[in-house]
Amino acid sequence: MRLHKFIFILTIGVLFFLTGCAEDPDYEEQYIEVEKWAGVDNIYKVDREITSTKEVDKVRKTVNQADWSKAKASMARPADYRFTFQPKDRRIITKAALYELWISPNKDRVELVIDVESKYAQLNKKDSAVVIEIVTGDE
Image (tube, rainbow, N blue to C red; front, side, top):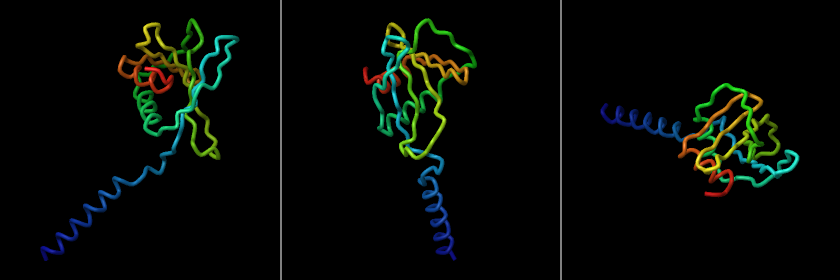
């Protein structure tokens, strides 16, 4: 009888472990398409694509955890960068939010705007450093 209990408990434990390790069915591999302000006529040019899953997840986590406020932001100058999260599977069509990014003159803070959703966030120094390094490629 003890052996049956042990095998039952072991089986339940293994099932919990396997369920915890299972891939999230809603998870979709993505990349970030970054556009840089060209400096004339509000034209942005594709600067780079970030395809590293680790980096994409870091940026996604950082912007999702930002303290977003509902506000229509009016900035003094065009955004330094714009970026969107895009599915790696090009057959998937999604409506991606456009993140506009301003870097402070001291290069230690980032301000983000999602214009369509009227959202604004200013990141702390630590999170700003993460986003600046990954999105711009600079430290």
